[in-house]
Image 1 (cartoon, helix red, strand yellow):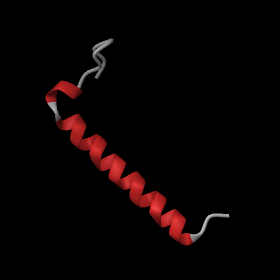
Image 2: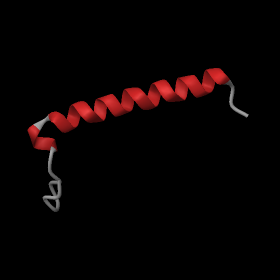
Image 3: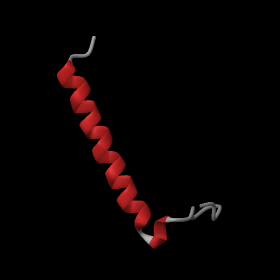
Amino acid sequence: MTSRFEKERAKQIQDKCQDLLNQMLRDEDNKYCVDCDAK
């Protein structure tokens, strides 16, 4: 069973990764798939 601390830590990591992904998607070069040009 996971402790409250572990759950909070996992949420912090998830939030940090989501923020990083959002920042990367703001870059014009990252808005479209290189292989298939999908958005």
